[in-house]
Length: 449
Image (tube, rainbow, N blue to C red; front, side, top):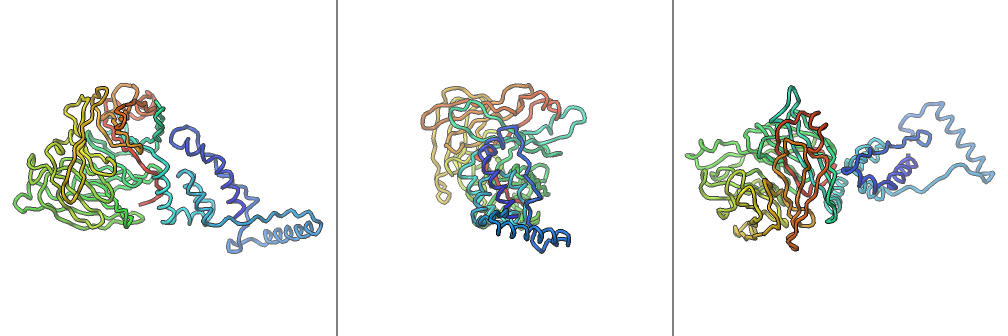
């Protein structure tokens, strides 16, 4: 078994670079795992049959004879230390790891361990920068087509790249993708709330998990200290709670193997405007307090302590549902502001201090005019990304833009595989335009909920 694992590791490491490159950006399928049963050496606990045992003894005697003759046929190689095996496995693509869990109990134990899961995520975060694009046909379906959400991903390339290829990672049936909704990435998982149900998926492993919520406003957060996923749901109907002076929320803790536990917390009155964005263990979303169109605030939910607080914000930070866009900018919460749907200038309001409610403002001039674009955030190099809000009803190229803050330059990159294929549109019933949600700096994870 050890020799078998060594051969697999050796063969895999030779093509590691190709697998990493082609995992999301190529069409080549992973090679099958070599399973040469002749080299297996089963321990006694697997229950070797008598005739197999005799054959083993005979082979051993033959080997001893050959050793006496100086022509030994057995080759005893030193074992690879387990920490070295784990280090080699951590360099492999997720899809290979999912297959290698079946090679041996030892590998399965290593890959499933929490220590390895955390190590793999840390390495992916440092070296594997990519983005995801989610879009759906749930609003406009031709004929009797099935509503799907599609999730594609691609790696960020260097500044010389003018085009990228996004491969379809997964499709989720019977999930609506409404106009103006988004699909944020939280510690390797994507989440989406629709009609009192939260759907969470891992595009790397293909796991999909859906559970009911007590309200239509639910966002996913992650506590990096305890490694805990939690979802926050606004339970109270805002108009019915004006006399009580507070709102009721439900905190849903996600455990292993789909286990859930629920707890209630309260907050002062507010009216939610944006969806949630998780940054460094805190979940943020824009709101007005105490009622519609009143004082702009940012609701802050500390995922670990499960405490809610309201942060005062300038009036331009929270404008309306479609024009209030929250992004992560250099590790901080920022509000992206543009005046109209066609713009060549935009503002960034950055939350400098959560405790003192201190904000700073930066204004940027673009060298060209963008139309019907939004900003999902930045890439690893710090470039601000602009992406379309909708997928056109026509078959045409899909472009995103990268704005370099330091050089004041912008570049356009075409994403192949997003809406530019007539066969794909026809197969899944795309008729009219559909909404698009892009999540930058998505990190691969092998974790399971």
